[in-house]
Length: 414
Image 1 (cartoon, rainbow, N blue to C red):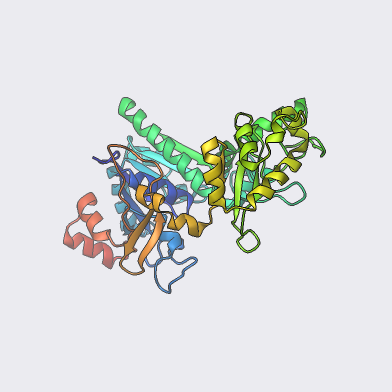
Image 2: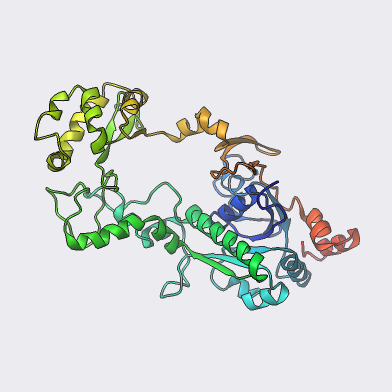
């Protein structure tokens, strides 16, 4: 049995943040009904296309396991169908601009009147405050949530990360809130509103930097590369590749770095594993040298230490370094390119990377459910074609007969 079998989601989301949330719920077995505009659908269907006139990977990789219905919610019959969908669904999820549902005539109060048990979940850019009406995209959220100011190197500008912590990260947060609200409804019988702002979601993922902001008031941050030879200002600085967890870590070059931009490995010089690292590198003398054999002694010369480590790693491939450091418990990890990740057999075996067959684009790779349940394995099904399930949903969920479906189509409601 699927974990969310029997739960029906009314998916009014588009682009990335909302679809991330609803796709996760669909992977867990919920019946996700994606409502799309007739003729065009989710705008990502046509964005960043690699094959002409075919749904883009941007869309297909965010909308697996869903059913698609096209619906004109500005049409009177379309509003009636939408009302019936609210009656029949457990959760409504949207990531429209602020006030969009209200302008459609479906405020939270109206939604509650239609279905007191429904959970209405929303993603916005900002929470209540001076910016709440502003439109937000991924990189804006990363900047406003504190991530960009702490990412990059000290001598460069703020940098955004390639991980979609604003969009996909907030979608994952919203899914957690929906699941909590569903559990609450089992006890109370009532639905409720669930809201998650992208700025809030990014900040939640940057909590260690908020931790460091408070620590900074009591002295320099010794695990940052600015210590002891650099300077600290009033705010948490950009930490480069420092580990952020109190253990010195850095990215170092490996064999082939001259031509391979990803021939690097991350090495953490954890105190407990330092002896093993020194021996593997042929630096046993460090263990007897008071200039090197304690964390306090090494702290002022971390740059020199990682330079010595890099001199050693440059003689080996990143995978050979892994083979030598793992047995002596030195935390390390190769810098894997997206090509290497896509081709990694272990990720294919666990369903973290999945090959899906699409009727128009053929086979493509996508991410699978990163959360594994022992009794409810997730199956990744292809994304729906635009309006592919319109008739099916009108029959099964709304209860329309063939004549009513034909009339709705003739009227332009679907």
